[in-house]
Image (cartoon, rainbow, N blue to C red):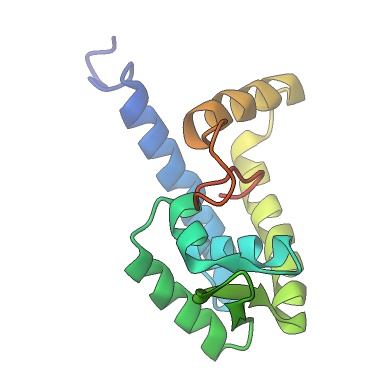
Length: 158
């Protein structure tokens, strides 16, 4: 362990620090669209399925309190990027659905995030990036979650 960096061997610290670095650059790239990483993540999940996603599932997927998701959805809805609709399978739930404008912004946002993140990973062989993604998925995305539990796995979202 380095005496200059006492946490240089601490995986939790390194993951948190790396996440912060990448999230800040992603947020900076999303700012012209009126988005930040969390709002972009909600928009990305809402746009994955034409039927939408429940607020409860969003909270579980993102590791957030449901009240935080409500505020994010409120902001996206006021911008015309998502709508809320009753869930036909359980009318107590609301489905969050990306609008046409939301799909366009989501696509542009994804391109911006990809460009912003590429700078952090320049020079890293593709094979190593795939290994990193695989390892992080094992930690961040539960593999065996029953359908309907609100924590189904998602791919590729931040």
